[in-house]
Length: 176
Length: 169
Image 1 (cartoon, helix red, strand yellow):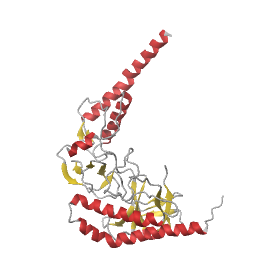
Image 2 (tube, helix red, strand yellow; image 1 turned 30 degrees about the vertical axis):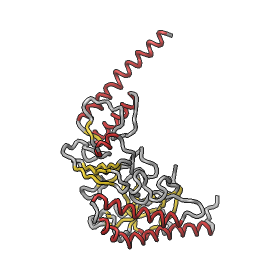
Image 3 (cartoon, rainbow over the protein chains, first blue to last red; image 1 turned 90 degrees about the vertical axis):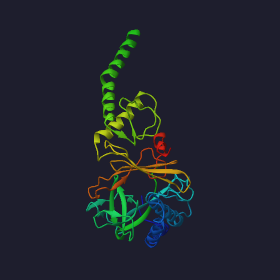
Image 4 (cartoon, rainbow over the protein chains, first blue to last red; image 1 turned 30 degrees about the horizontal axis):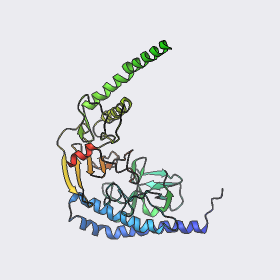
């Protein structure tokens, strides 16, 4: 079986990576402003307002950019939206995820350095699913605020943090 | 044939007496020491309806036993290793904050004495428990991934059961 990639494959891969990086730019530039607005509401709603905002951009930027020609519905970003109750989506709340954004090594390495566990993590062929962008905190943990220079993934249910600069973003079909 | 039938009945009775019943009793004793999912499970209660462990409605002794056995696992892990939000063996008052969601329905965020959180609205439930990652600062929470989650929520939301909606009454 040939493993060579066609020009179309390469173009689409580049489009996925560009879409996620564009989303990251929006996150970096808008997060503090939205967080400030959210803090004027009840404390319990702050996280939900930020989640709704992030999820809406995830759908309108990343999902939209890779939804041609076929319709793509991505796994929710972070905790997903709260605006539609039982759904984690903003647009078309009844839609089920068909794909997910994963991370692989930008240098095509077989491992990624997990800054939380301070160990190399062996990449599965499909990469690790992205949960959200985060920032390393001074206590060695992470928090959700700019500059969003790390990706949070869950490996076997436990957190792992990877530097954004080491990563390429790819799309994978959701397992059913 | 009649003898075979009697033998089979005797074997089933022996199985229930020697194996199932003692384990069932043991599991129920474990439940006496704890609360799961934010509501009391009185001593000796056989769980046949929806519980916070599983909102599915089960019928029959096998399912009831399965529910109690699940509860036993939660209790056996002890405080600090609970897999679901609830008292988890820690007694004390809960802290509850209510709100109205953007779709206009009632919601409540209940923090239990063990710091786990049950976040209930009319349409979904989310839970958070103590984060046991070795690098997690004290007090950090992690989200609960539900086996019976609503599809498309990454396992983070489940349908509320009566015991969840009780908090909104």
